[in-house]
Image 1 (spheres, rainbow, N blue to C red):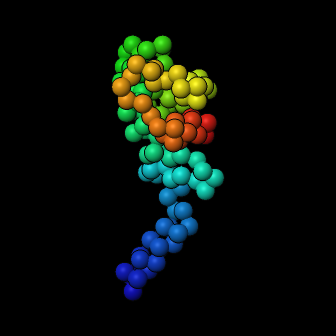
Image 2 (cartoon, rainbow, N blue to C red):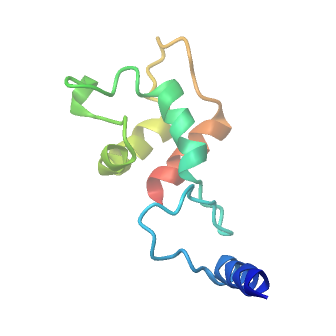
Length: 109
């Protein structure tokens, strides 16, 4: 009986959002409104941006190696992504249009 009650409690918490008070609730799921999750955006930032925009002396003073740092530069980042100014044309690795769109949406959220 005790096991049944505990199992029921776990199910209730799982379906009713019993972990909302946790500070680290795991991955940020994409919303139904087309938002991009951190799990989708961070690998793109790592691939295309962090090589130059991280560490103690990031290029142009723009640090993008953490979510918090990246969101501080969201307006400018959207501008340069949409204008295809970043990554610079000399960079070997360029994001696809779809990847640029995803990053722009993530920065706007």
